[in-house]
Length: 402
Length: 105
Image (tube, rainbow over all chains, first blue to last red):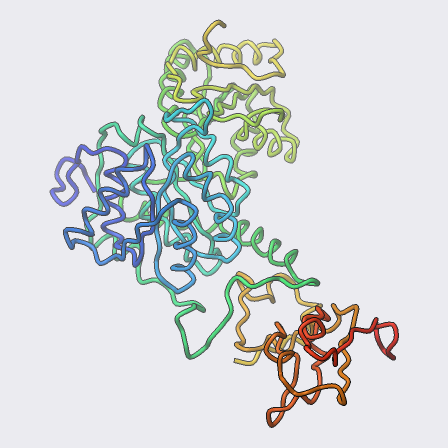
């Protein structure tokens, strides 16, 4: 679709949260159970307005907490209803127990997680501590740079979650305030295109089928098969890699917007590369352009699919890179580095790639990240590519008192 | 539906129901919980007044009643909690270690 001539797909100016609420309206799921929390609130609020106006048929369940929100979602999805929710930060943390249950009960729920720091000190601004803390919960995780990506990911949620080879919940992330509250361009699909893309929900064994009564969420017994069920979850994650790429490709055929597990920029001949998630990817690309103008072969990999982690694709993209930096907007206190750094190191080691690496921690609690901060990181990588060593400890970008 | 689980101990992860669903309704009776028991209730029929307290108190419906009278314990499902012995107003039920019985645990 061409933006300039296509009146069906005019570019609109919306916030990230409005974009996602619009996608949810177009999907019109059977059930939305959610609780408001900054900076996700507008998603739920706008959707509630759609419900009040009668422009969606969805059953909107107002609950007393995020633990209840996810519990209601699990019940709803187990009953065979298409179910969505949204959260952030402390709300995400309060859902934590139920996130594992949603995944292990194989509920194809689609959730928006607007990334916000976890307390304390109490902080409402963006970092990725919330969703990174849920990375082992069994949910598919997809990170998004801007409102357009967040909208598109929402539309792609059910085709991934409900796929027979997957049947796992899907969560989509984007940066709190930076994207959730800031206005950016959005080219939406038409309602008919959305309906055609997601199709009807598949039927699977569910609670409300009284002809075939079943037990959901049972005790596994004293000599049970928990182990086998966990293996089945991992195998579904393995299969999800292909399914997700298939959905990305099918989406590209409709919209012209091609997504991949990792979004590479100037990586073909790169000597140095920065791996980064969400909105800071733009900063990294600007700096890569500046370095390229100097003749430095710099590239950027934007993380998109994080669970399942596309290990082989990272190894392939970084096979000939001399130094790679990983930008983490979350930390794993006492760990080797931030969560993305640890993931990437493991991937490279598994494929015998021994590029020099550095971990850049940035943006915690919404600390601004400027192009010159990313450049600081890139300059370290540049020096490393020419023979210098990289620090083994974390490098903090835009830290005060540095 | 009927769920054939005779080979369940050999099932691969893919052979189990997705999400650990139990697709057969009412099959809890197939799960023998009697093996959890360390003490077994024994009823003295001469002392028993057929008040049925044990029947109402039993949390596992393991007191079997026919024609309004206690006839036996369901030892496949009695977990040996001893509520029946505690509540019996005439001490007609006593608890005995499983080791006293043939085939006991």
